[in-house]
Length: 617
Ligand SMILES: Cc1ncc(C[n+]2csc(CCOP(=O)(O)OP(=O)(O)O)c2C)c(N)n1
Ligand SMILES: [Mg+2]
Image (cartoon, rainbow, N blue to C red; front, side):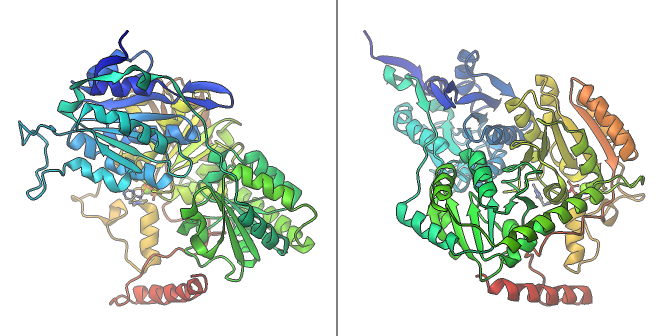
């Protein structure tokens, strides 16, 4: 009996992928749910032929843009809390470099995607081939080297037998709670087609399980001592709470010890909005309640968060005298902000903290202050999201209408523009996966493609994609894919005729309206045309309509819900009005010298905030 199997490198790769399984609460499922592919020279003959052979176990999805198909793969993995994932293959050259931005999105957000870019010939015999970037001084470099800084693991498979050692490493990274992120295997097109006698056991089924690392006893004891000394604690919940599946543990800890909880963009939904300990979002686009508590607390327990500038108000928001404890599965994040690191899986660590805090509780007045601030913030949300009946609604009013239309198990998706701020402040998240925001890279063009990935992961949920005119125009190709695959989305396009949030930021920094809103740009006489987003979506095979106010939007959302294909509702919105309450300073550097007095004034404000920030460095 032969103990080897003669396969091409590409055939071995996809066969190996079909053997990878994951254990989710006792259910064994394929780890890779499919492959997004746009073929071209560099992957059609090798990888393409191999994918065809396994199409029944590992479906191939043809998308319309390499960057956006990878966004869909990212959103898919995020919706599955990194337990299930997709691969993306593209042709050598432009097809592959189109995926580099998406690799960065996956990298920043620590989400697993297997990137399989085609690469130039390893033999180099036909060099230079079509789409080959020639580096004069170094022939080992190809355009796929661009993936290196945005991959957690990179390899170029220049011989078929390299898979034997490379694929286990790739799987380690894709399934490791700390290192999790994009993996790139660059596949020279000739090597994809080369055969090798692979050992049969290489293709044995492998079941991956989430590794849970408990906290170190010394770090745990130190943390418990510190918390016991605190009177005014605040817990910050980040994305790690979701990925660890620590929702129940968070709820129990927060409830038992009356801990106020602020949620980051990635953490939102860790507690349902109506949980008594949920103080709303925290940070630059956070709730006034969480932010006020962060300025006054004596201890911050940061769980599963990178503590990025949006969560910390560029380090100027928290009480500089507060101690910070960081519960994080990775030491890289745990040591930030002069914190006491408590390295470990969030679920296990919260369980052990819970047990160790018996008998402790925060000061009564702190608990009361938190409850009061929470009630005030809920009132702000109510007011901001109520329809004022105008023909130019604010983003907040649209958020309110979509939130009311969304059911218990539905999901809102967003990434860039003014909407992430309004959504973070105002969206009432009913369950853990109800709020899908890509705000690690905040990549314009993630929204629609991301919605597709979410829908593929949760076909029974209605997926509401909220997107600005700018992001829509930047990358909308996957509307066609959503129609083609029958993965229905509801898109709400907020058309304020330009890059509204950047325009406001420009004004805040003392700048004149310049090159952001369409009316402030170089255009032909008569100005930039009015884009008909509904007609555009219809042209791609979706349904679409334009509405004139919130009341009409609510009615259109009903029709959108009833539709069985992707449905686009567009409306004009106010570019200037945003929710003033809540929020905090965000460091954006302002010119030190300028002939404009507005810039000089903005610079003076900037320096005041910088002074406060210094106390927290
Ligand atoms: C790929 C990418 N390019 C540029 C930016 C910088 N940027 C952030 S928001 C924004 C404008 C977004 O416009 P729109 O989608 O219309 O939303 P609005 O700001 O009007 O709410 C820009 C240019 C980005 N985040 N991503
Ligand atoms: Mg806009």
